[in-house]
Image (tube, rainbow, N blue to C red; front, side, top):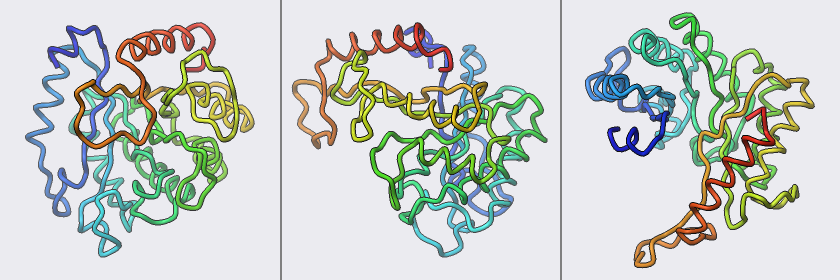
Length: 263
């Protein structure tokens, strides 16, 4: 956290895994997370708390993967409420789940925007009741080009949230705006192309639902650059040089600031 502050960053997005924090119903493990919250607070770093994963008891035999959603959304809501009651004086931003538009973040099953909306609704109601100044982020939606059923592109999944009545239950849309192998000035908008501009499809989906007021936050973004001596597993994504990574990152920030007031 000291290095984060010294580097000039002003936010920390931190996963708080339900699977570890409530290993048995109603029995919470707070100590490690108390230290994280306290350390961030002492350094003036606001947290975006990502509430994600599920403990085995909440899955009730639905699968061994911790990314499986709970059988009962009320169990997740109870956890979210307990979390907000404990940390609401120091945390105001809560992201509900992560990448539910990908099967492997939804228990290996077909993704389901309606089911995710039920989870989002329950968490938002409970968090807002415990922390009246809370801001709710949707899950960070992964950039993809597929239309289902095990992977759904972010605009299509977000539209499914709106269709399921989820609009009142989030204040911010979480997006993942990677550039992949293209520079941030690549303005092509093509259904099969993954680039930094692709987030505009997400904005279009919001406008089509007459939601012009809700902002998009890039909860993750950037370009992959492996060191020259890298000997580990190859990245599935096309990389860029370290110099390009710096140039592209600064360029993306400038482009968004100048042209995307909704982000």
